Length: 369
Length: 191
Image 1 (cartoon, rainbow over the protein chains, first blue to last red):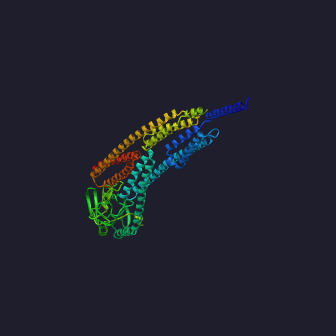
Image 2: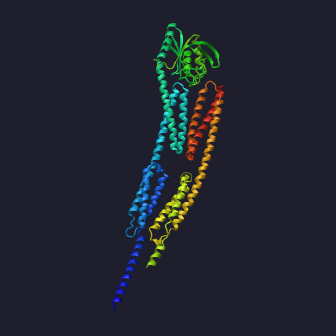
Image 3: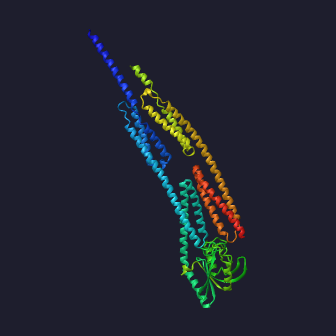
């Protein structure tokens, strides 16, 4: 055997061995690639989870959790690509699998947080709706029991309309817009509350003046032994005074803006002051009537002052024809400023009154004590 | 040996990356057309197909190159593109339908407000009815305020949200109009 022949055989054996080794390695690699499975179910769950979270509005309502889920999914995809591209045995799926699972976990949390946020928001709006509805009910009874003021009623009704709209929207699930309408309701009620506080402050300011009027009227009746009338606007009562004491009391309706002192014609307010009966009308459009001497000198002075200060529109008139008349007992303030009694009470009053009978009208007798 | 290896490599199927990007881009267009809101079913179908395509691609990527087959993934991506396009078109049409319906509602509400205001202006102003009329005017003003808010929502392009607001406003002004009519009847009796 020659030396060259041995070398050739050895070389040939080596090459065949190398080829065999390569073929075996390639086979093992292929088998391993086929045996190891990418975490497809984890990927599917992560994708579904993120879609559900988005559908639940988590991208807005649970933004941090949603972004975490998105970030984990993105990293999971990258890790999955790396694992797929890696040579055996380096391509392992533990990392992408755990990242995808983490993404699903974040998506679930985001979904829950978003659902909870919607539910909480809805609950909060419903609670707010209930609270404002209760508040409006209180205002309704306050306004019904107190003196009429059109501006209060207008504010109340505006709030009421906005509340109805909010309730409809909340029922349909439009929570945000329902809430915006509730904001309007709340601002109107706050304004109403402020106006009422101002109104009460005015009553307190004027209590001394009213106390004086009442005292003078009672004194007149006691000294002169004559009948005098005191109308208590807050109590909706017209008291008949004889010899300084209340001998009769009638329920009465007032002007639709009775909560105000009368300042001009057409304001719907019942005047406050000391007046006298100037005419007894046994037949009137409103059954029977006692005409009062409104405006008196104080009213004229106030009117001039208000006109000069621009507190009332230019061209306003002071008004007149303020009466105590019948057709009352409607349980609401409906007149243009007159005092309306039940017709039977009007009959009694006419028997007790005469031309010149003092009629004192105060905002509140209790408040003046 | 070399030709064997070349055959191995040449046998690889390419991952449909470009098609996938196109599919995602079509879905993005559907999203911009607010398909989630106006064509939710089609949008969800497109999203599901996209997920399925991605899973299928990963499944094939995990295989040995010569054994990879992206045909199913390509079919799913084609479905994503088609459904997304349908969703986009449906969303555009539906959004326009809601927009038109909203504009009709605005016109109707405007007409109801005008009718209510006219009726209120003509209502007999007799003693005892003035406060009712002032309060009804307050109702109309409150409805006008709510209509302004709803119109702003409409003008911002949030037609779906504007729709529910406008429906609530319409119900309110319809009720107010009935109250005005009742007040007029009652006022006429008082006269």
